[in-house]
Image (cartoon, rainbow, N blue to C red; front, side, top):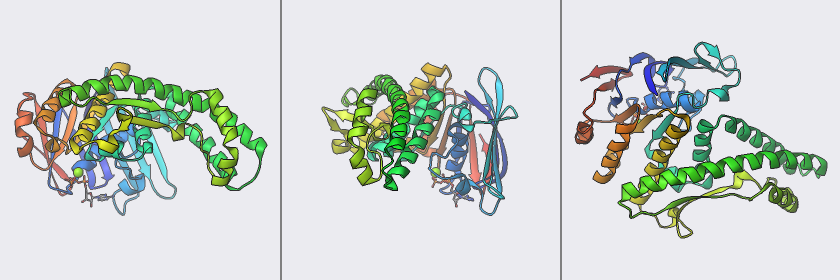
Length: 364
Ligand SMILES: Nc1ncnc2c1ncn2[C@@H]1O[C@H](COP(=O)(O)OP(=O)(O)OP(=O)(O)O)[C@@H](O)[C@H]1O
Ligand SMILES: [Mg+2]
């Protein structure tokens, strides 16, 4: 997949810009706070329909403006146009268009422009809660398997209703039973998908990690579902009912799944060094890149936010290999100096954009 054009209007620091890309490797260079990450964020919004930094559309909108717009021309087998528009007043409204047609169901736009983001924030997959690991896996599965996102949304919707009923302390067993049955079905489907994808991801993760650590880090990715089967779900949710009622939320189901990363039953969180954690994150991202490529048959776009310089020589070499293989990669960095050696190895055409005060100048 190649991004050929990016147009931004009122997007964070960008009033109105239009960029043409005709290279595989694109660098955004600028001082701190000039708006490098903002550009990667804009591209990733087209992919994930939300910011990888966790900000809302309201926060992304340029201050004191009413609408923002991201336009793009992408190239897969054929060129297509993907656009994302947001309006805050009089009512908050988001519009996503593919070749001028508005998506009635916006989740259908998810992953049309497949991207893999590498950012210093990714460490949260290792260091954050199991929720962060689930989020990472869910986002990947949503790109690979379209109906998954809808199922997840539906599961969360029913779960919320069940929790509201529990919180109100209404002992409405009939209603609870209806929720239990609806949830059990979604739970099973989500669990099966997670099981399959985590197994496949583990294969690529182990490969990448072996390369990166010279065989030293022998960690695995293991899915630890909250329940193993639909029958078990249905019996556990009945057993836990009094507990759920007391707590005011549901204690059974895929929203409590865990994803283990580590060795010998010990999670990397308990013993991993900074370097091991970083290698793990890069390996996870590389693995998701491989899986997307394999399953949907197109190379995702790599969005690399200021991470190269954090890497030691060995990891940089590994990175160069990854970049050599990918379709297109966007990098941000404060100056090219630190990464000159490393991009020197990529004897390819590249574009360099210098950012200052919300404008970009292409340099060579
Ligand atoms: N909604 C917004 N409207 C206008 N400006 C914004 C908005 N949100 C953030 N900014 C500005 O965007 C800038 C940050 O942009 P960005 O995070 O892309 O910088 P960066 O070049 O990646 O910096 P660093 O090198 O520190 O990572 C800040 O100056 C901030 O004030
Ligand atoms: Mg940044």
